[in-house]
Image 1 (tube, rainbow, N blue to C red):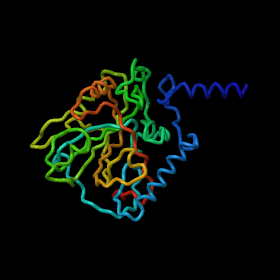
Image 2: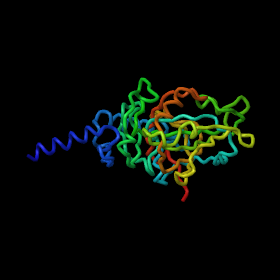
Image 3: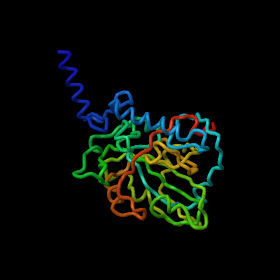
Image 4: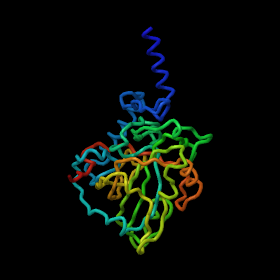
Length: 296
C-alpha cells in the first residue's frame, strides 16, 4: 500500500509541470541541482570551472548574474557606478526565460537545462491561481528553443547607455561612433506570466519616450522593492565559459510583478528592438574571485 501511495504522489508531482503548482495553486518544492540528471548537472559544473580557469589572472572585472541576496565578492576590479538611469539613454530592452539572477522572490532553480542556457535559471516562488495558469492554445514568443506559457518566469533587462544613442536592437544600440566605451546600466525586473487580461500590460512596462533629452523606459515598476545595485558585466550563455569584458552597473529588483502573457506575445510580434523570443540564461556566477562585493 505504501508503494502504491508513493507512486501516486510522484505522479502528481510530474503532472504539475514546470509551474511547480498543484491544481489548487499551492506552490510545490522546485528542483534542486542534486535532483538533476548527473550528465547535465556536471556540464554546468564543468562550465563554471572552465569560467574560473579561463579568467584567472587575466584582469576580468566582476561578472553577472549573481545571487543578489549574497553580498560576498572578492573581485579587485573597481569602476565608477553609472549615473542614474534618468541621466542615461535607454538603448535596448530584451528578456530571458527564467531569471538569470537568483534572490528575492525568484530562488526556485529551474535546473541545468540543456547546458546552453535554455530551461535553466530561476523561477518565481510565489503562488498562482488556477485561472492565472490557464494555458494558451499556442506558445507565446515561440522559437526553436520553445516558447512561453502562463506560470513561466522572465527577467527583463532595460539597458541604458551614457552614449548619445537611441533605442534599437542588441548591445550594439548602446554604442556609438563617438563613444565606444560608454557607461552601461541595466535595470532588471523579473516578471511572472499569467493568463489574466487585468494583469500588467507588457507594452506599458516597456514604453519608451524622451524625457528631458534622454530616451527613458517610463514603465519600469516602482513597487517591486529597493533595487540591489552592484558592479557586474553583460550576461547571456555565450559567457558561460569565458569572461564578459563589459563593465555594467546593475539594479535588480527583488520582488516579482505579474504580467499578462498575451501582452508579452503581442510585444514579441512588434517592438523597436527586433525581439521575438526569450533569450537563454548565463549560469549563475558563484566564484568569489569573479564577484564584486555589494556594500551594506
